[in-house]
Length: 525
Image 1 (tube, rainbow, N blue to C red):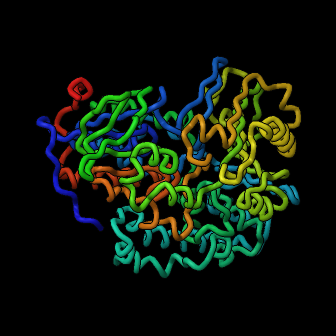
Image 2: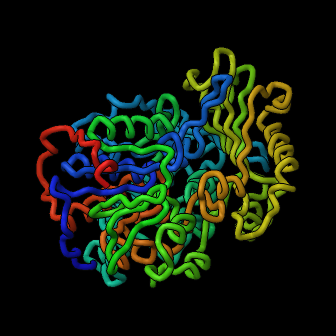
């Protein structure tokens, strides 16, 4: 790992850190820095917090999550809140789901209701393949050991490639089986392809195929059964809103509708940021914007010797998603909170997405949040969140021409789930295509799950938490180590904030003794 940078000349009142982006990583980093008494200015280009983890609200009273809808492994966020003297359960209500989700296999119409109850889950598996039920407990035990071994690796930053070969990685390697894909690793426990799919479709949380994703990521489905799938009341956006509220109470100066023009650099080190043409001095800058989209804009190419514009363009990116957010008259008591329709030829469907072909018979995910949380819609109404995995913009689809047709295709696919009459009941609708992800939500190449997590884009090969080419610049978010997914991004914020504190010479210790209320940073420049 790189040696800590020499301490800069700090502001007389103590260090000041500028955070760019109020997504989950930026919010978590701001909380952790403020908890140690650091002055934090958080600049967000939009009018609400959360980035992709935000709430969409319509005039009719429908509420949708824009992006993530599965809330997993709350322990990390609970620990971040505890570091701020708060209890997560006091800030947001988390409802544990059972069933966690429903899988519908289009080929034969089989249905599996995933449940954290081990005996019931074994019975669900047995309905698909009686012999595979015996593999469930060994799957849990194997992945429990894998997560235990790999957690120390995920909890530290990487300053160099040689840092990969730490003692923790050496201990973990025998459990990681890097030569296997997720599907191949699951074959050690489950013979039926449908059962393996039930424990591997979660690689789509990373925008990757289970037939190509490294076997490490069998831990994704394990986390669901070991620690639960939750719905935050009000949606995942409510978590971002709670984090922003706590950050404000701790004195973080959150500036909405305030895009950052660039990160200012003098003699190889940041001096702060430029906002609306004005320089704002800072001792460190944490970038929580989408890496592929933001870095070419925020830092001139001459300051990025490793992650040049050419390398960013040549990197491998996840799939994108075609989205419909539908406000519906009526309720759906028999539709699960989360339902995944798995296309009959799922392997072909995934290969089409990976190969840049727009699927004509796609898999579809539907969230019916109101079955758990009626507050997401007006009384007697529902919100349906519809997601279709599609290629990212590197493959050149013309969404101006395709959008209307693909909307009809997506709505037709809902008929497989018994929602054939849905069109007549739509009272509010928003569509987001891959082009919209890029143009409206600043997602590079419309790749909603950031850089892929193949072996050469993980750990030290991923953009690092300390951006070594420019002193005082740090990264956090799904495009940075350790990777995508809310709990992983929160963990990344812990890594990044620790590096910032270490480099600024802020000693670890008790929380800041008083809430920071200094709002003079922008006025003073």
